[in-house]
Amino acid sequence: MLILQIVVLALIQGITEFLPISSSGHLLLVPALTGWKDQGVLTDVMVHMGSFLAVVVYFWKDCINLTMGFIDMLRGRTNAWGRLALLIVVGTIPAVVVGIILDKIGFMDMVRHMPVIVAWNAIIFGILLYVCDRFGLSIRRMADMTWTPALIIGVAQAVAIIPGVSRSGITMTAARALGFERPEAARFAFLLGIPAIAGAGVLHLGEAAATGVTITIPMILTMVLTFFVALGTITVLMKLVRHVSFLPFAIYRVALGVVLLAMIYSGMPLGAVN
Image (cartoon, rainbow, N blue to C red; front, side):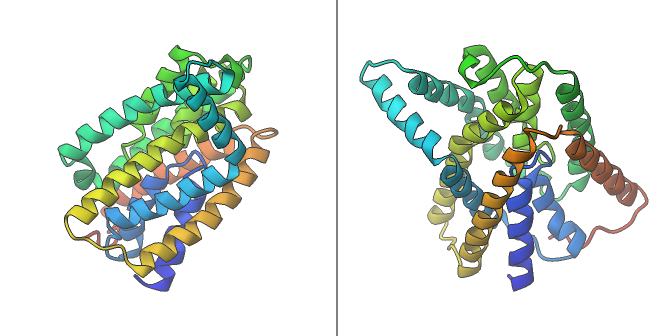
């Protein structure tokens, strides 16, 4: 990969993974809009691993508490952190099941070259994000999380496997629809994403190793740069959600979708997607 391509991919992933605007959708658009050769699934996995490390570092205290709480649960000692860890595990199950099924049928390979899916999902889920944030109540905090909302948010996360939906976006949307305060919705969305991103990364890295595909230096550089960009993005977003609604992100999503649809249906070429 070119140095410019490494920087662009890292910036896009690092910024869009945690903003509710779809990182996978933007990554798929890179070759379509630039004419660059498709960076491939393994590169996408590496930049997602950079994002994973960023969220773990930012929420390191929560991660330690969740881990210790889960260990206590296994020892028969119930506490709030152990309960939350168990709820995160429950919320992760739908994404794991759906991800395995879609991977087996080759769904992701099929949609990698279909920017129209990204466009429509950007619009549809952008509008849904605004509606749920605008009219959702703010009466619940993380301590109020129970089995039902955790599972509902987990199902929403599974839908985000489709490019253009946005994992953070749809989980925040679901949490706001269920009445969780905006900062709490963002926090749970990020924590819920840790096992999902890690699991997907391990799965694809294992498949790559089994087929003899190697991780290159450019891929590692992309992951490292993504980590720093993502860490900065999380820091900024967690401050923003305390004072700003999701409206700017919804507007961006709809505008992006409209522009892409205009380009697609007007017959304008979107680069060499190969």
